[in-house]
Image (cartoon, rainbow, N blue to C red; front, side, top):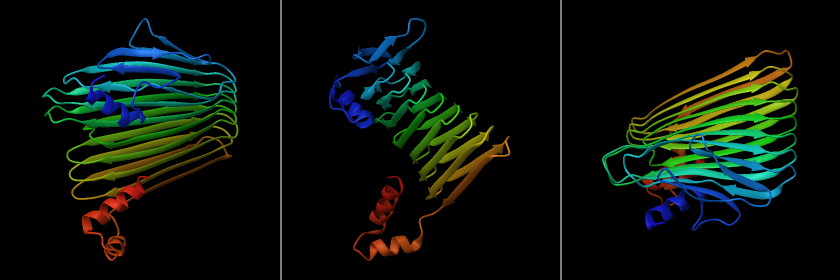
Length: 305
């Protein structure tokens, strides 16, 4: 890998080199390298771009890294990754995409990640998106996540997109069985003329299933954001969706949280709040010696933590 690719790898996966343990690394539309472990098998798909990640039942305290890097302008790709997490496993999956676009053509990565979480399995999924480059071409990322959680399964998703992505449409759909849980924490910041749309569709099918979806975002300059969530309670269940956004400059944000109860014992809550940084927050920090710009940055960074 060259310096640009190594820098992207650090940004999206906090790695300085090829990781130990199970991993798959894709660079500029080609599988750069992969390695399986005793309990985690990574198999390249034969019919389309992508991989199958098969995690054995009972696997504990292991992780797998699957970053994607693009450093060529004009490159567009669609990748399919399927995760099969065995019964009783407890694992961490680190994904993410970094794009460096130094030319005039658009660089685009679209990924469809499907998770099949086994009975009583636990998964922590971390996904970061990052873009950079001194060219005129756009950085485009369109991730789609499909989740099926079996009885007693648990999945936590942490997604972050803080810098350099000109256009993104993120869609997450999930179906939960009995006693299954899905937790989502989204962090998003847009600036310039960027556009970002996130959509969640979650079906709580099983008895005592539950979900908690929280999106925190900051929209700056002339950027635009759209947040959509739809939680359907189809059994005795609990669901909560929340969107908190800070709007600055001439940006715009729209939030459309929707809940649908199809069962008398479905307990569902939605919240949405959009507003500017409070003046008293700025004044308080400026009295401590910060400039107005430094105070704004401190508030934004704290909000997105």
